[in-house]
Image 1 (cartoon, rainbow, N blue to C red):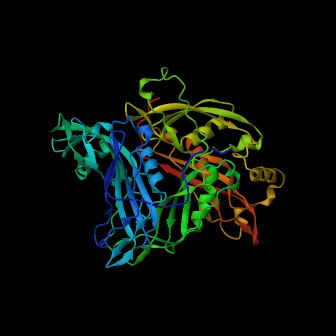
Image 2: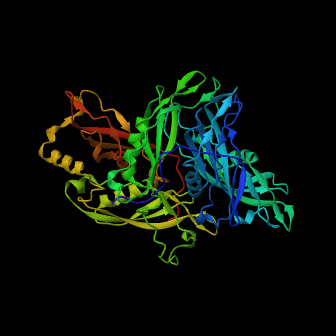
Image 3: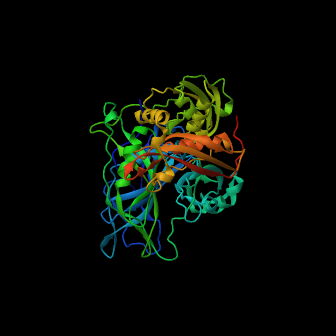
Length: 562
C-alpha cells in the first residue's frame, strides 16, 4: 500500500493583517502585507477577506528560539492567489501556515481604482514562551525578519534549476533597545552577509524584572538564491492563471480516505504553458501523478518584465481531500520513539522526534528485478538540524544493489527536524526497505510486461535512431547531489540507460557508468519518475531505449558526524 499522510484540496492561497494572538504562552504574529517590489507599486495593497491565524505547532511548544515564515504571494486582479513561495525556518512552521492558507482569499490590489495583479509579502513570526510580552523577565522577542539573498546560491543565468532556500543559525547581540549590534558563530562563508542582513531584523529587547537589558539571541536566517526585485528594464508582472483544473483523486486511494499535498515545481513559458513540471516534495506517491497531470493542463498569461514576456519559475502546493474527510492514515514512514536513547551518543538524543515531510519510493535495482530476486536492506541515516539526510550507511542487505537503492531513496527524504532542549538537533535512525517483484507499488504491472518484452522480443524496443522524432521530456525531476558523496567529491558524473514505454514513462533504469556509485544511484532515483511524450515509429507509439548523461556539482562540505 502507499504511505498515508499529508494536507489537502487544490489551492494556492495566502497572507494577512497584523495581529498577535496567544497560544499557551507562545504566540504567533502575522505582519501586514507589504510590497515585494515597492518601486512603481500599485496604489492599494490586496486586503484579506478573513484573518490569517496559524496555530503554534504542538510539537514545537518547548522550543527556545524564535522562528518565522516569509510568504511571497502572486495575487491576480480577481483576488485569487496564483502562487506562493513560503520560506520557513522550520518545516513545522511552514506546515502550520499552509494549513491556514488553504481557503484564504484576498480582495485584489488596485492602481488608479482598477484591480491589478500584485506581488506581496507577509511575515508570520513564532516566538517562544520565554519571549512572552506580558512577563517582567523575558528573552528578546522577534518582531520582523527577511529572507537574505545569497549571491553564491544563484543558479547560472538562463537556468531554471530550482535552488532551495537554506537555513543557517547564528548568535545575535542586541543592545538594551533591542537593536542588533553584531553577529557571531555564523558559518564563516556567510558571516559578512549576515552582519549586513541582521539590520533588517527588528527585536523587542530582553527584560529583567521589567527593565530592558542587552542580551544575546540564537536566530535563524533564511538564505535564498535570488532577489525579488524587478530588472532594470521594467517592472515584474507575474503570470496570470486563465485555466486551473482540479486534480483527480486517485480511485485506488478512496478506500483510505487520505488527504495529501504535493508540491509541484514548474516554469510558465513565454506562451503561458506549464513546462518542466516535476514533484519537488510529496509524502505519498499515489498523489504525484494526478498532481502533475493537473498542473501540466493549467494555462497562464505569461509573466512579463516591462512589456516583454519571460519564463517564470513557480512552485505551488496541490491539495487532495475526499469530501468530508480530514484526518486519515499515517505517513507510511514511522519513527520508532520507543527505542531507548541511552545507547545513542548525546549529540543524537532528542526530546521531540523528527517527522517525515517528504519521501520517495526506491528504484528496484535492474539486475535483481530482471532475475526475480527479492530481499531487503537496512540503512542507518542522520537527519540534520534542517531536516535533511546528511549521512547514510548500509547496515545490512541481502544484495548490494538493495542497499545502494535504499541509501539513494533515504537521501531524498525530508523531515521536520527533531528537537532537544527546544532547539533543532541532529538525530539518527535506521530504516528497513523490503524488495519483492510482486510488490505493485515498486513494480507496476507495466514493468512486468516490459521485462517480458525485453526477454522475448527485444527487437520491439525500438532504437532511438528509428523514431519519428526525438523523445520530448514532459517531467524531469533533477537529481540531488548524494549525501554519501559530500566531503569526498566536488563533482561527479553518471550515464543512465532506460526504456521509455509506449505511454512515455521511464522504466527499467540501469547504470551504464558512474564516477562513483553514489552518483549512479542518485541519477537512477531521479530518472525513475521522468515522463516523456510517447515515442513513435511510423506514427505508432512504441517503447524505445535511451541513454542520458548526468553531471553533479556541489561545494564540498565537511563529513558529517558518524
